[in-house]
Image 1 (spheres, rainbow, N blue to C red):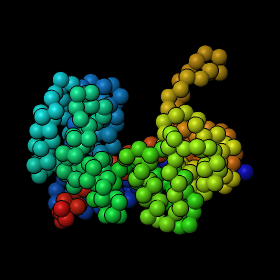
Image 2 (cartoon, rainbow, N blue to C red):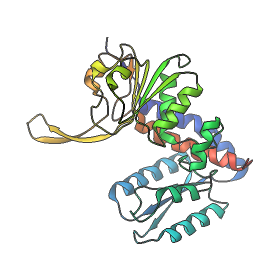
Image 3 (cartoon, rainbow, N blue to C red):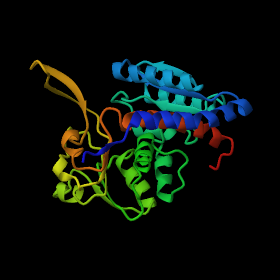
Length: 294
């Protein structure tokens, strides 16, 4: 029997509905919530993402400002801009659009964002607090994966969970979330020997590498829950034989859906939920600023 498809678009819609009541309560009592996105340079993909993000925010009732800065900006100038936003009480959320110019230290920029305004959860302070199960704001993609696993109906406690990919804001936080929920977690990466032996043992398999079709169907345990975080653009033959570009995941969806119990598609899986989590984090950040703990 083919796997149940976990509809990320529907999950995202549910999350936006859940956030709307908290957003309304905040704005009635405390005024508007405002997210400021900082864009450096003229990267077309970043601009498209920023425009989509703005549309989602305005639809939800969150103010959204886009600060566009020249690609020639220096690191001290960018740090000063972040300091200005940190100090502005009308700004409740800050995010930095990537990529940054090569000359700028990405980690230093992320560390400068006020942890309570860091709606993407990328400040090293927020990442570090996850080790103590006491994060202020967690990374959006890791939260999206956690939500999708929850919506799959799988029992996490006692499950064998395998996370392929150990980036600082996706794979590692996901591993920590699953461990905190009492799963037995195996963290796989580029140096893992016999990756298939690990993935075939997984009740819950999360793949976040950025390599198209890394995991074929016969590497998956029958009935497993598969969460595919990868978004890859590949060129494949179209119906007329001419090459066309398609977006695919890190998991070979067609073969995996014949083995898995539940699986996220690409596109339409983790991506929409990550965007919804950004909105939820933006509202959560505003509430947490009312009663800061640091």
